Image (cartoon, rainbow over all chains, first blue to last red; front, side, top):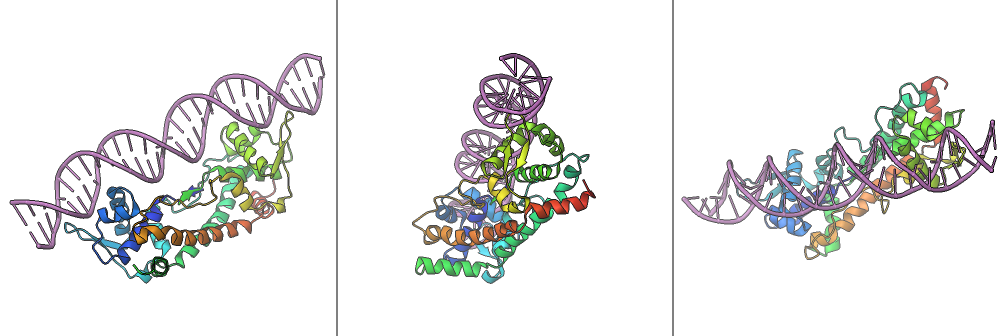
Length: 144
Length: 144
DNA sequence: TCTCGATGTAATCATTATAGTTACAACGAT
DNA sequence: ATCGTTGTAACTATAATGATTACATCGAGA
């Protein structure tokens, strides 16, 4: 199947930081916590922005949540940054031989099963809100 | 996260073919149904062999199931061909800044959630045996 | 025993996705 | 008007995947 990029973990990191930080979150500030290049951060923030999860103060700088922490689930974040063309996490071998009874029908049968598996995973992601995640994070860090 | 390769769909195709075909399944024969190169097939069969799902008649040629159709689940096949180093389908951005309370703790919190999501997916895959899948395939093809 | 088809595997290549980096125009608060 | 910040484009490096050629090896059957 397709594999998840580390964009996803960075996106969650960004949102957690924006949620917890009392100071303004510039891409430089975030990049330091994530330990990567600010441009990487800006690219991902761009995706989160497009998904309506955050907004950015142009010119002045700084990223802010667009929705409540309990209104954003891990599934929302996942969909914002994992841009699989069709949304499927599974790749299929294209163009099996239509003359072979197996080749002609295997994909539709297999695809059904895969979509069920993917749904189960996405359902799990939808159960977790950023509020919960941040709350667990706070416990770990002591305070902040 | 990481994405699944099309090896998985090819592996399922191979096993279905081996299960249904009355004639000997050589890599050339299978490659024709899958519509790819025989070497691709042999490589994947090698993985299935290593996982104990099939055996191959060396010299003579032909692949045969090593277990009963109802003893092989989609999860078995998945584990046989998707060789993620640690088994995780999620990638994490490494080396976040340990000096930042968020950077230092976000990964362990996020990882827990991701493993739950992955478990949900794998549980779903474990529910489907090749026997079921082949049975649905038979319905589709009429007979064989 | 010899032949011949089939397997197992290495080596190579093209393609694609990702991550990182530099550079720079545009924005807007001060 | 300045200056820090954002939004992108462009480029590079790296890795995974899929495909292909080549070839040594195996072993069933003539």
